[in-house]
Image (cartoon, rainbow, N blue to C red):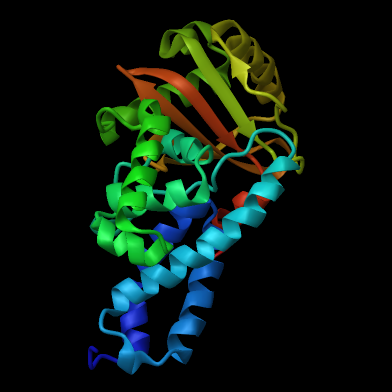
Length: 290
């Protein structure tokens, strides 16, 4: 057992624990709650018997997440409109970088909790299957099968190549300018024929209750919105990488905070992800108020 204080150990490992919980749950607020509960259990544990604090803490976090996912799935069934993960922005910690992007996080929702845990712990966070076995409470061969099934289910959603940040943000600027100015010709040139637009308002604010599929539907919706922007302009807060995708934060009519993330393939937009549910943007509101 390390001679470091339990508080110092927890502090040093907390960012990684938050990342695991967020990737499992898709909610930063829930991830922070999970890590807080983990901290309580860590400080109350018989730490003299703990040989590897990092493994011990990851085990607590993952098992709490597995429990939380059962109730989260029930909440998803009654969620109004499409569900998107809470957006997070450019991680300052270089160790936080991984190949999880917003489309992949959405794909993870289709997995069972155990498949998601095995995939994330092994494929994303690099843990050997014997450690994954200890954490999720299944034999290593079973964990290997869980991760394999997960890969098969989400293969199409995995990023084939990293989006160049500068180029991505350049396209985000072009998208913002075209969509807010009503230049549908410029906007059309940025989109693929099979582009999809998904908006998450959670029933709290106005948002499309079903995805818009195809160039015609997406352009028609943006032409309609552009008429509204002419009356109540969209205020740009910042451009940012949002869960690995280029995009921007805006304040829309009625003071609604919104994030827009763009999935790019070969320099064109194949999917637009808009988060408007204020419950999912509370951390941004708090940051702006400070």
